[in-house]
Image (tube, rainbow over all chains, first blue to last red; front, side, top):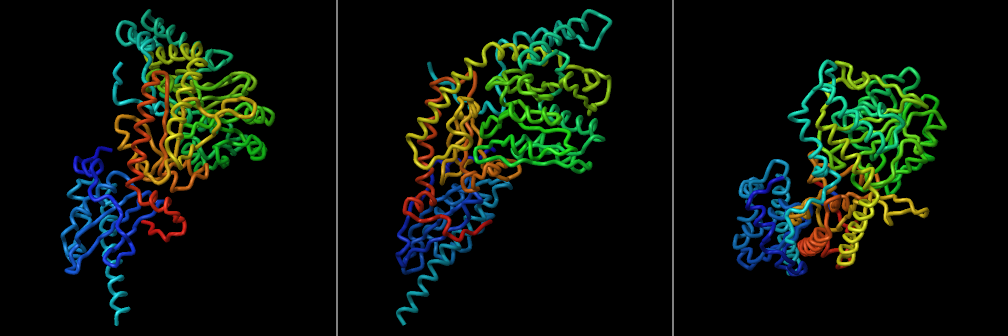
Length: 133
Length: 415
């Protein structure tokens, strides 16, 4: 399988690899995929009081395209509001990375990871508001 | 000496042509181009004589009784098809039951499927966790209507060397024809059609330092005399078993490759085995949570080699196979990961061994061979270790496992 230059770049120099404190109320964690399917993405966002994603980290178990999709996703969502970030579509990721048809599911997983991290963050915020009232 | 990159460690897929083989082949492309079936002139006679020499060399390599027992084909896929379908068609009136294993090459499994559609019944024997077929399972599976049993000499993915001698003895005792796909084992482990009671054997030149596009089916001519129905009709070449003009240069190369193996295989297997062991040691001493797929140790209690000397198949837990391949860009290997297969399914061989899908996705197959050097093995081992470490730093699963989280306790979202 020939990879696009962009996939190779993200695979060799992945952006924003790491771990945020999942117990921090301002951190949302998305864990999507399954080891048995060969892809697991963990994407985390740290959101400030203005609703802006000020930091994002990922770790991915998967092929080069999966690693590149999640790396690109973290790059794109940093600095965006959570509403803007939730608008990111897998097609845009697939197009940017020139993913072949058999690798489209990697970009779908990256979109799911963003949404899942945002969901987690929103749930935490809702829970916090509830505990305050 | 500077290392030449990329390094080839995929000898199970194919092997480079030995220069000695090429030298013998060359004249048969140009000056001695005759058709071996031309009986009326010197060009044909010369080609026929060259084919005869090759037939003798190949027969000698596997200890066949007569050179005529070697039927040339286009390769092992054709040989496997001819063996199964040809025997089924000839002996179909006698019985419609065939026995094979779950980890055979697709040429066997898919021929079996085709025969099932034609009214035959095929028993696919399970293998154990190391990939072995139990000869007693063969015995138990044999019925009055069993006509053929086909079990490979050695597996192409995990290197398991099957108890062919034991299976052959049982088949002979029960009057069942025995076929083996010997492709991976030839030149790497003991193989002798007489002492192992093999009635049919598939071989191919390109896995033994010969050219691609030429193979053979050994068909025993006496005790018992095996009969086949040809699957390719035409001019009646190869005693009517396989019509089609012979690939004379290819066959000449095949014969030379066989001659080299007859003389050199034991030393070569010992050398390659040492290199493989060194690769294993370097990798396993530097990394945790790596698991060898297939038999290890490589010899059994009686000292018999039970794993191909050139094979190492390892699962690197928590890192996906295709991403490993991408990282090992200067080392040509293959993976049992689904992502690398055209079908997007993980290796059926690893699954038959009971390797969990999580680990099947992380497997890498190293295949060493005649031209593999110590320097190449060192380079591959070092690169593998640094690659796995880097990818584990990227892996959420490795981090979770190190935190003591049981990955099986998580409700994963299958996709």
